[in-house]
Amino acid sequence: MTLPNGEVIADLNGDWNVVQELYGRLGDGGTTSGVYRITQKGASFVAIRTSATLYAQAGSEGARGELDKGGFKNARIVVSVGPQNAEGQMSGDGNSFVLEDGRSAKQTYTRR
Image (cartoon, rainbow, N blue to C red):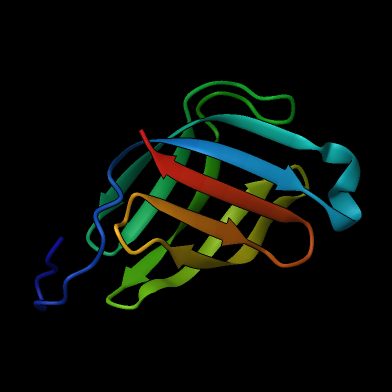
Protein backbone atom coordinates (compact mmCIF):
# COMPACT_ATOMS: atom_id res chain seq x y z
CA MET A 1 0.00 0.00 0.00
CA THR A 2 1.38 3.42 -0.92
CA LEU A 3 0.71 6.34 1.44
CA PRO A 4 0.15 9.90 0.17
CA ASN A 5 3.75 10.75 1.16
CA GLY A 6 4.99 7.98 -1.19
CA GLU A 7 5.99 5.58 1.60
CA VAL A 8 5.13 1.93 0.82
CA ILE A 9 3.77 -0.16 3.71
CA ALA A 10 2.11 -3.55 4.12
CA ASP A 11 -1.60 -3.89 3.32
CA LEU A 12 -3.21 -5.69 6.28
CA ASN A 13 -6.86 -5.33 5.16
CA GLY A 14 -8.87 -8.54 5.34
CA ASP A 15 -9.52 -11.58 7.52
CA TRP A 16 -6.74 -13.21 9.54
CA ASN A 17 -6.55 -16.43 11.56
CA VAL A 18 -5.24 -15.48 14.99
CA VAL A 19 -3.77 -17.61 17.76
CA GLN A 20 -3.46 -15.79 21.09
CA GLU A 21 -1.16 -17.27 23.72
CA LEU A 22 -1.25 -16.00 27.29
CA TYR A 23 1.75 -16.56 29.57
CA GLY A 24 3.50 -15.01 32.57
CA ARG A 25 1.01 -13.20 34.79
CA LEU A 26 -1.82 -14.35 32.46
CA GLY A 27 -0.48 -17.90 32.15
CA ASP A 28 -3.68 -19.51 33.34
CA GLY A 29 -5.45 -18.00 30.30
CA GLY A 30 -4.02 -20.58 27.92
CA THR A 31 -4.35 -20.36 24.14
CA THR A 32 -7.35 -19.24 22.09
CA SER A 33 -7.87 -18.91 18.37
CA GLY A 34 -10.27 -17.13 16.08
CA VAL A 35 -10.65 -14.86 13.09
CA TYR A 36 -9.96 -11.13 13.26
CA ARG A 37 -10.92 -8.66 10.52
CA ILE A 38 -8.31 -5.95 9.99
CA THR A 39 -9.34 -2.60 8.60
CA GLN A 40 -6.51 -0.30 7.58
CA LYS A 41 -6.77 3.39 6.80
CA GLY A 42 -3.44 4.74 5.63
CA ALA A 43 -0.80 3.64 8.12
CA SER A 44 -3.29 2.91 10.95
CA PHE A 45 -5.01 -0.43 11.46
CA VAL A 46 -7.51 -2.00 13.85
CA ALA A 47 -8.24 -5.73 14.27
CA ILE A 48 -11.77 -6.74 15.33
CA ARG A 49 -12.74 -10.22 16.51
CA THR A 50 -15.35 -11.76 14.20
CA SER A 51 -16.38 -14.42 16.72
CA ALA A 52 -16.43 -14.74 20.50
CA THR A 53 -13.64 -16.42 22.46
CA LEU A 54 -13.51 -17.56 26.06
CA TYR A 55 -12.41 -14.06 27.17
CA ALA A 56 -13.76 -11.68 24.50
CA GLN A 57 -16.96 -10.91 22.63
CA ALA A 58 -17.40 -10.92 18.87
CA GLY A 59 -17.00 -7.37 17.58
CA SER A 60 -14.48 -6.42 20.25
CA GLU A 61 -11.10 -4.96 19.44
CA GLY A 62 -8.16 -7.38 19.41
CA ALA A 63 -5.35 -5.05 18.35
CA ARG A 64 -4.51 -1.70 16.80
CA GLY A 65 -1.46 0.14 15.64
CA GLU A 66 0.48 1.96 12.95
CA LEU A 67 2.82 0.78 10.24
CA ASP A 68 5.78 2.38 8.53
CA LYS A 69 8.15 1.19 5.80
CA GLY A 70 10.07 -0.86 8.38
CA GLY A 71 7.00 -2.72 9.64
CA PHE A 72 5.20 -1.87 12.86
CA LYS A 73 5.69 1.67 14.15
CA ASN A 74 3.60 0.92 17.25
CA ALA A 75 1.00 -1.63 18.27
CA ARG A 76 -1.32 -2.51 21.13
CA ILE A 77 -2.92 -5.89 21.74
CA VAL A 78 -6.11 -6.22 23.77
CA VAL A 79 -6.20 -9.04 26.32
CA SER A 80 -8.39 -9.77 29.35
CA VAL A 81 -6.58 -7.15 31.49
CA GLY A 82 -6.93 -4.48 28.80
CA PRO A 83 -4.74 -2.98 26.05
CA GLN A 84 -1.01 -3.75 26.22
CA ASN A 85 1.82 -2.11 24.27
CA ALA A 86 3.34 -4.64 21.88
CA GLU A 87 6.19 -5.12 19.44
CA GLY A 88 5.41 -6.44 15.97
CA GLN A 89 7.33 -8.67 13.58
CA MET A 90 6.11 -9.16 9.98
CA SER A 91 7.04 -12.06 7.71
CA GLY A 92 8.91 -11.25 4.50
CA ASP A 93 5.88 -11.99 2.31
CA GLY A 94 3.43 -10.02 4.50
CA ASN A 95 1.14 -13.03 4.99
CA SER A 96 1.82 -13.44 8.69
CA PHE A 97 2.92 -11.38 11.65
CA VAL A 98 3.29 -11.57 15.42
CA LEU A 99 2.35 -8.98 18.03
CA GLU A 100 3.76 -9.59 21.51
CA ASP A 101 3.85 -7.54 24.69
CA GLY A 102 6.90 -9.42 26.06
CA ARG A 103 5.29 -10.02 29.46
CA SER A 104 2.02 -11.88 29.11
CA ALA A 105 0.54 -12.19 25.61
CA LYS A 106 1.40 -13.06 22.02
CA GLN A 107 -0.90 -12.92 18.99
CA THR A 108 0.11 -14.73 15.80
CA TYR A 109 -1.73 -13.63 12.62
CA THR A 110 -1.91 -15.65 9.39
CA ARG A 111 -3.71 -14.28 6.34
CA ARG A 112 -6.77 -16.35 5.36
